[in-house]
Image (cartoon, rainbow, N blue to C red; front, side, top):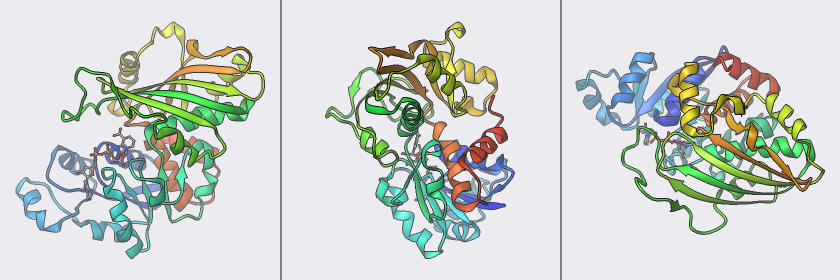
Length: 338
Ligand code: NAD
């Protein structure tokens, strides 16, 4: 069993902990919080040993009735590998702790590529993670871009990509961020950072991205245009999407044309936290124009798509020798993808 610690039990960390627990070859040895909170209570209910970054706060937790297993340093020592899901910028500061105890670590997309020197996407570079001590799972948007661009590149070759990310303003549980009533150009400069981030995984891809933020919480929406090297074939690309377990094809007959419709569908499926681990490509949007231009819309559940990627990254780095296809299938089966 691969012993996994989750440093930072928040939006991403709590989902990674549950996904890891569902795997037959992994177990959670601890999760961490900085202060008593509803999430700390949930960690206890799930049976995850709870560790704290600042052990002097132990009394605060205990007076709230929350049992503490020890300090984050003790948690790291108990693990084979640490998933660092602390807020962007904090994770990089933890690197010296992982080095101190000689532990493997995986960071999230809020950290720069340099934190690990290697950025990961299950569909693109699973084998390159093998034997590494450090890796970074790219952000939710970059994960979504990686999956579909790799698929199109494998099918027809991708000459260049132009994409706009319509981003959610805040996660559903986050009442401090916005906008409440605005469309914000974020960043106002072009290109946005998403293109260079994709190139940390797929360096050969010519890509320019733009991004804006809107008052919604559930998902991001991507408007993608790819110039293909060869003449495109819509039926072929739809078939490849159908066969890609991390990309869901949203069919026209469902009537789903929005993130709201996707949320209802995920909820009706009985998915934990209404999570959509797959990128959601709208079938009716998939269009080939002038033979070599591919257009599509895809929705990305920001809280969920990177979770399964973290599980695969753990397996690539700390597990037995296994192929990407085998790991992806095992991850998905363990989570009851349907
Ligand atoms: P979050 O704020 O929801 O959770 C972070 C957790 O880390 C909190 O539970 C907090 O208590 C804990 N924490 C803070 N400082 C800590 C410390 N020093 N030691 C241990 N724990 C500490 O953040 P999040 O949204 O889960 O983001 C985590 C990472 O995942 C970031 O790099 C972010 O960019 C990335 N990410 C977030 C999303 C998203 O949509 N939320 C999507 C993809 C990637």
